[in-house]
Amino acid sequence: MKARAVRFLEANRLDYGTIEVPAPGPEDVVVDVRYSWISPGTEGSFLRGERTGGDTPYLPGDPSPFPRVPGYQKTGVVTWVGSEVTDMAKGDWVFASVSRVSYGVTDFGGHVSPAVTPRQQIWKLPTDLNATNASGMVLAQVGYNCGTSAPIRVGEWAVVLGDGLVGHWSVQTLAWRGARVLMLGHHDTRLSKLAAPGCEGVNTRREEPVEAIQRIAGNGVSVLVDTVGDVSLVEALLPMLRHGGHVVSAGFCGTEGYIDIQKLRLGEISLHCPSGWTQQHMDDTLQLLAAGWIDAGSLVTHRYPAERAAEAWQQIVSNREETLGVILTWT
Image (cartoon, rainbow, N blue to C red):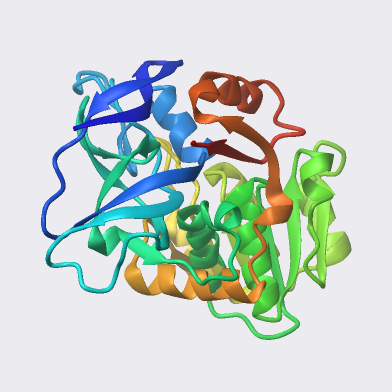
C-alpha cells in the first residue's frame, strides 16, 4: 500500500515522497490526513540526528537514526475501519498519533497519509472542535502533563522555562489550575502570545532570570517547569523555590541530563519527569481543548502544504522569533 510522507533522509535533510505502509488489519483505522502539526523540539532533535528514540539520545557507534518518517500528531477523516473496531465509522473526524509505516529505521511515523493507525492511537473529535487546532494534541498533552504533574495551590507562583509550544500549554494548564505563572523566554513575539489570566512573560535576553523571578514572584515559587532541557539553569533557580517545592523536567537533555539530587534534598524539592502520552492524559487534554481552556489556535503561526515540508522546516530553523505553531496541510 502506498502513502505520501515527510521523510527525514539524513541529518538536516528531508523531503516529501512516497513510501510503503502495511495493509490495515482488523484492529486498525485508516485516516485520510488533513492536518499534521510539527513538533519543533522533538522532530528537530531527530532531524539533527540527536536521538534514536523518543527520549533516547544518539551515541557514537549507535545505528544510524535515518531514514525515518517523523512526527506523531495529525487529524483527518476515517476512510476504513477494521473488523474489530466497533466505535469508529467512515467519515468520522479523528485525531491520530503514530501510524504504521514500512520505511526506514522504525515501523511508525506521524506525517503520513493515508495513515494506517492502531485503534488505541485514535481519538474521535467532538463535532465543535476545530480539527486544525486539535492536530497538535500530543504536544498539547505534554504541556498538560507539565502543568498537572506537581501539586500547586490557587494563587501560588509557577515559573515556566521556555516560550515554545510546550511552554505555552504548560502555562495555560497551570493557569487553569489557578496558579500565577511567569514564563521565561527569549522571543518577544512568542511571549506576546501569553493570554492566560495571572501570567507574565520576561525576555531573559534583557533581564537576568533570578532577578526577574525575585522582582515578580520573590522567593515563593512553588513549581519550576523546564521545557527546554536546561539543567544548569534549573539548578541555578533552585534557591527561588519555596521549601517543599517541585521541579518538572520535560525538555530533552541529551547526554547532559544530570542533576545533583543533594541540592534537591536540601529544600525537600521533588522532581517530576513527564514523558510520552497516555490514554487518560490524552482524554483529559481533548476535554480541555474542547472546553477552550487549552488554546491551540492562537499559537499557529504558519501553514504549509505537506509537499512543502522542507520550506516549513526552513521557516522553523531560520526564524524562531516569529515561528511557533507550524501545520502541514494535506489534500
